[in-house]
Length: 161
Image (cartoon, rainbow, N blue to C red; front, side, top):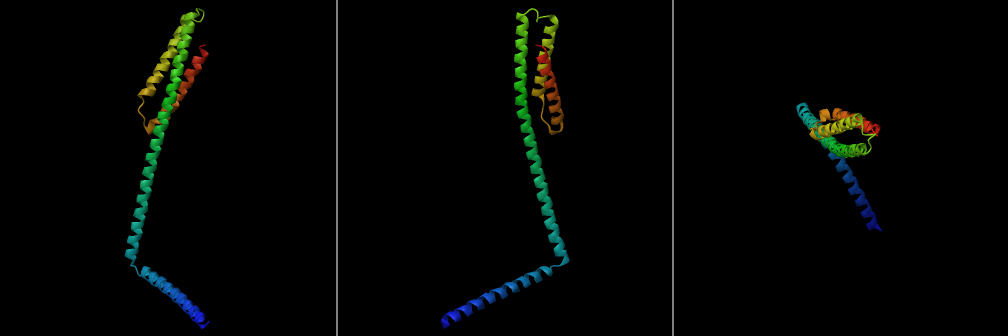
């Protein structure tokens, strides 16, 4: 029983010593930090600021590179979609020409000229898309123009039936 009391007192004593050592360590650390000269504090602050600026610059560059890759991927995906639409337009125009050749009432010179004009517009659109060199600065305008021209061409092809 006395051994348990002695052991309990020893443990309490060790716990108290540990707490005192931790408190002393905290005071020593606080004292050492406060003892830094203003120049040292300024140098440390400047180094921290420089590192933060560098990290922000790197993150911005990484973000810009990712955005550019994403935009380029969107361009290539849209280019594939446009090529499918252009091929569908070619097929429709060819069918309309074949129908006009079979049916003389649809094969008027004016109608045939209209079909040739549609085919020419489709070919020009194909050429513009295939020859376009991707750049972030002109991509948005190019995309709007192609979408508009594609929509107009599809409408005109449907009206040629």
